[in-house]
Amino acid sequence: MAAAAATAATKGNGAGGGRVGAGEAAGTRKKKGPGPLATAYLVIYNVVMTAGWLVIAVGLVRAYLAKGSYHSLYYSIEKPLKFFQTGALLEILHCAIGIVPSSVVLTSFQVMSRVFLIWAVTHSVKEVQSEDSVLLFVIAWTITEIIRYSFYTFSLLNHLPYLIKWARYTLFIVLYPMGVSGELLTIYAALPFVRQAGLYSISLPNKYNFSFDYHAFLILVMISYIPIFPQLYFHMIHQRRKILSHTEEHKKFE
Amino acid sequence: YKHRIQVEILDAKTREKLCFLDKVEPQATIAEIKNLFTKTRESKECHNEHDHSFGQGPLDGTRSCARSCQAEGCDTILPTDPQWYPARQSLRLDPKGKSLKDEDVLQKLPVGTTATLYFRDLGAQISWVTVFLTEYAGPLFIYLLFYFRVPFIYGHKYDFTSSRHTVVHLACTCHSLHYVKRLLETLFVHRFSHGTMPLRNIFKNCTYYWGFAAWMAYYINHPLYTPPTYGAQQVKLALAIFVICQLGNFSIHMALRDLRPAGSKTRKIPYPTKNPFTWLFLLVSCPNYTYEVGSWIGFAIMTQCLPVALFSLVGFTQMTIWAKGKHRSYLKEFRDYPPLRMPIIPFLL
Image 1 (cartoon, rainbow over the protein chains, first blue to last red):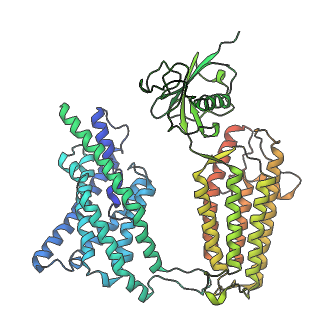
Image 2: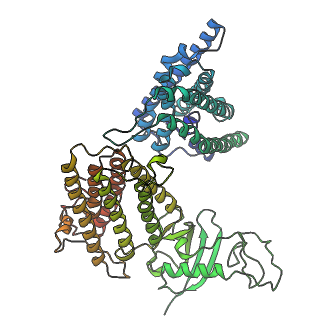
Image 3: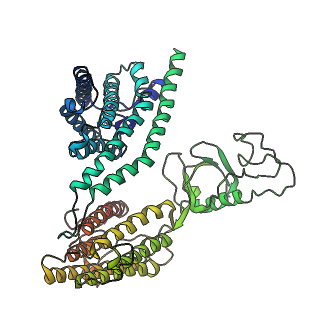
C-alpha cells in the first residue's frame, strides 16, 4: 500500500515512459497507441489533472505566505486535494478499457492506496488533519503528480522536454521516501483515535458472524509497506537507469 | 532411409548455446529430447583427468555445450548450472512461442536437418498429487484446531470447550468430510494429465486454502457465534444442498475417471451416464465445478457466516476461469461438441 510511489511506478498513462525512451532510441514508432479520440481525451484528462495539482501547489504556497506557518496547511487545500486525488480513479478505467497500456491490477492498487489514505484515514480521522505528517505526503504527492501528469501530456503530444523526463525519473529519489514517511506517520497518528472510537469496526456477535478491526487493519497496512516500499523504489531506480541512459546515448549520437 | 536430425538447444533468453545433439532419430519425441538434454547435462561431472579451461567464452559454437570445459572430450558445466530434469524444461521453436508438447514428434515439426529449439527453465517442479494433498490436509487440520478451541485462539476460559449450537458440530462434520473426500479422490480417483506444477504454486495455493479455512473456522467456532436466522429449517435446507452437491461432485469425478483409461492422455467428450448426478453434463462442460460451488453455497447458508460466502465467491470466480478454459479447449478439439453446454452455469455462464 505504498501510496507515495503510487502512481510513480505505473508504467504509463497514454505514453509509457519506458516505451517512449526505447522507441526513440530504436528509431521506430510505437506500434499501436490510443486512437485519435482517445488521445484527445487523454490529453484533456492529463492537462486537467496537471492543472488541478498546480492549483493545490499554489494553494499551499499562498496559505503558507498568508499564515507565515506551515502547520495545518491541509485545510486550505482539502477540497481540491480530495477532488483531484479521487479523480485519479479514472486512471483505473483507462487501463481497464485499454486506452492506457498499464496493468489494471497494479494501477488499481496504487490509486486505491492513495484514495484510501485521503478518505479512510485523513478525512475520517479529523484529529490527524493538523499533523505535519499530512503536509509531508501532500507536498510529495503534489510535486510528483504535477511532473507525472505533465510528463504524460507531453508524451501524448510527442514533445517530451528532457527536463520533465529527467525530473520524473529523478525527483522520486527524494519524494518517494518523503511521501512514504508522511503516510506512515499519519496512519500511526490515527491509530489511537481509531481504537478509541472503534471507527469502521464491526464486533461479534452479529448475525453475519463476521468482525472487522480497523485498528488492526491499519497496522497491517503499515507492515505491508515493508516489503512493498523497497521493491517499488528499486524498480524506479532501475527504470531511471534504463530510460535516462537511453536518452543520453541518443543525444550523443545526434 | 533415415535422415538423422541435428538438434541444438539455445537458451530462450540469452540465445546461449546450451546443448548440441548430433544424430537424433526423426521419430524422437520432445520428451525424448528433454531426456537426452538432461543426460548431457548430468554427465558433465568432470573426473579431474585434466585442467579445465573455461577461457573460450560462451559463444564458441564449435563446442557441444557452452559454458562447459573447453578441453577435448570434457563437457564440465560451470557449477552454477541447476539440475534441469525433464519436467522443468520447456522447449519451443520460437523463443517467445508456445511450449512444444512432450508427445510432439521431431519429424512432424517444421524443422530441416538442423532443429533449433529454445529452452526455458520452468523452475523447480512438484507433483500434482503432493500439491493437492498438502492443500487439502491443511484445512482439515486447521479447522479442527478451531473446533476444539485449542488454547491461544479464543481466550483462556474457552479452551477445549464445546459450542452449544448444534449447527456448529454439523458444520465441522461437513467441512471435515468434504476435505477427507477430496484427499481420497486425489489418491484414488483423479488421473492427472500433467505430472507436475511449479513449486511456488504450493505456497500460493496453501496460503489460499489454509488462510481461508482458518478465517472461516475462527468465526464458525467462535464462542460468540450467532446461529442461522431461520433456525433448523435453514440448516436442513443447507444440509440438503451440501449433500446433493457433494454426491454430484463425486459422481462427476468418477465419470471423468472412467473417461480416461489409466496411463493414457486421450481426451473425450464427457457425456451423462446412468447416474442421474452426471446428467448435468447435458448443460455444462464442468459440472464438477458447478457442484463444488453449490457445496460451498450450502455451507455458507448453513453457517450464515460472511467469510464462507466470500470464500464461495472467490472459489466461484476461479472455477469459472478454469471452466471457461476447459470449455474453450473442448470446443476447439471436438467439432461435434454439444452446443447447449455452457462452461459452469446452465444457460448463463
